Image (cartoon, rainbow, N blue to C red; front, side, top):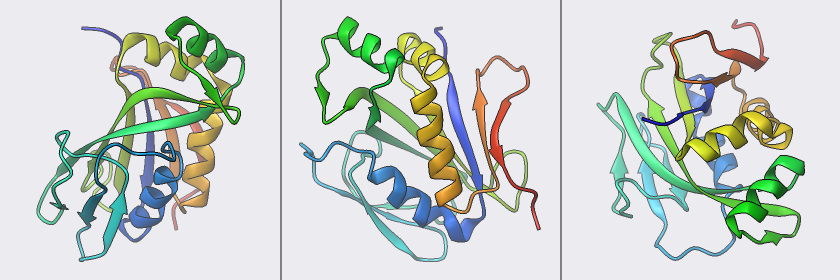
Length: 173
């Protein structure tokens, strides 16, 4: 099995919709699949440019511990992202690069604390995992998303059982 690096954003349940809407803004402007309607626990609906099980059928998160989504995100083209794009033959569009699938697992509740939800954005390939680690721009995208969403923390996780690296956080109330 290859590398599976991720950015984990921990937030209160009432901030999940805001975080998902923020993540949706990272998606490419043009989509080839219909939008996905996600109903969060509590009934709030969010329309996303993502898929669930590579389908666009509505998803109800109520009563589910984990909801896996597939995203396609664009990141600012810093040196690491540009090198990734050149090696993969990916275009730089308006200073950003669409890096491919980034998986998003939503955990209700978060594994570490039942009072929170975790949005786990993980790389689809070992090559992308190395990009996640090497690119300061990608780290900033996820820490900015965490802060804008009212999250309590954003961690970088190498998925190797070792401690995660705290990138951004606030003390819980």
